[in-house]
Amino acid sequence: MFKLVFFALFLAYAHGCGKPAYLPNTSRVVGGEDAKPHSWPWQISLQYNRNGAWSHTCGGTLIDASWVLTAAHCISSSRTYRVVLGKQNLEEEEAGSVAVAVEKLIVHEKWNSFLIVNDIALLKLAEPVEFSDTIQPSCLPAADTLLAQDYPCYVTGWGRLWTNGPISNALQQGLLPIVDHQTCSQRDWWGSSVRTTMVCAGGDGVISGCNGDSGGPLNCQSANTWEVHGIVSFGSGLGCNTAKKPTVFTRVSAYNSWITEKMNQN
Image (cartoon, helix red, strand yellow):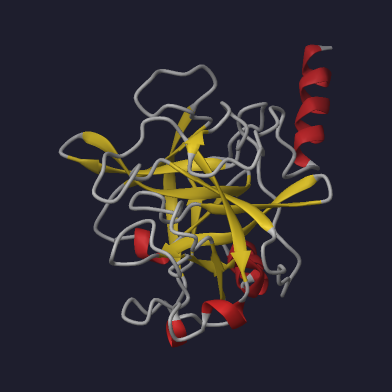
């Protein structure tokens, strides 16, 4: 009987995505705040081994029991990585959290670190994770989806709390409204640095992604599910909260076919 109940629960999780058991606080807070624990259950901490200890380096998004989406610039072939799931505070022991080795690193073959284009990578986990209230996948948006100006989305991560500030131990969230390509590509915004395969969000000079948030998701709600519309890619060299320099994300909906192809091949 127990096995049947467990299997039924597993199927329930396996056939859904983007529906957290603990609903996030989506009040329109100006500035970042601690996320409600486990309300972004697809958020992962990508960690690398340094002298026998594990250190957080980037965020990422669980999109399948065996697959995580992150940024290409987060990946170095010389490092050993693990993915930590089900976490709220990186410095505390938490029930239900797991650490899984990374079996395969798949960086986009046209990733260009100079132009910062095709900044996307997939991580195949050494073993599939079991979905639970604290570990669930995000949905992918439909191919070629473009969100309207000011569409409310949320960036999440353990990045720096301010420019040159400390890394946050507790998962942070921040409201980042979408900035459309026409606006973001204006000369006094990001100009030609922003391609159509990217999406901008924020730019009000109050809140943005920051160092350590790289690779993490831009979470946008569609109907009653959450989708990962962006992967934190780059921001202003002048600081983490600079007016007219919104955080720039790899636009996930431009890479649906690439994601599907790599997952099927591996």
